[in-house]
Length: 180
Image 1: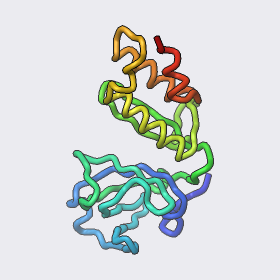
Image 2: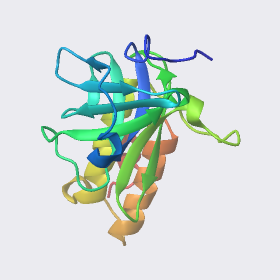
Image 3: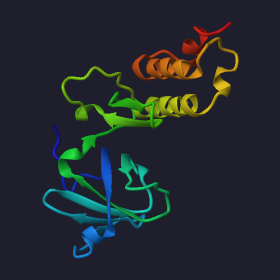
């Protein structure tokens, strides 16, 4: 497994950053400012990033776990450990999806973050993004189920989300099972 540090963290990586209060960095010196204006503070354990943009960052996928609701264009400080960076590219099957149907949260994770030999379906970045959009629609909309036969929309949602997450079936293939 590749080790990341201040010289290579910004090139083709996936990472989950956790927002921290600005007060955490008030006595720290900024070590680097990127062309886009993001600022970085390097430490032995990891790094802080002060930025107003997250998600797809150049050739990286950096996800932010906010303390409260996050809006792009608002500056946020987040921290991550060096060991929490993973290699990333757009074609390899590196990502898996987890869904919390209670909170309706859908997130993706890197395969190297798996614990206890969990069995998951891996997808590349583009496939993962597409499935996440579909799952969010299934969880929040009802028009996708207009011509389907079901007794309980919540049970149907659960079954469809489970199949989207854990199989390679297309959304259309899954819906065909529920046609009149």
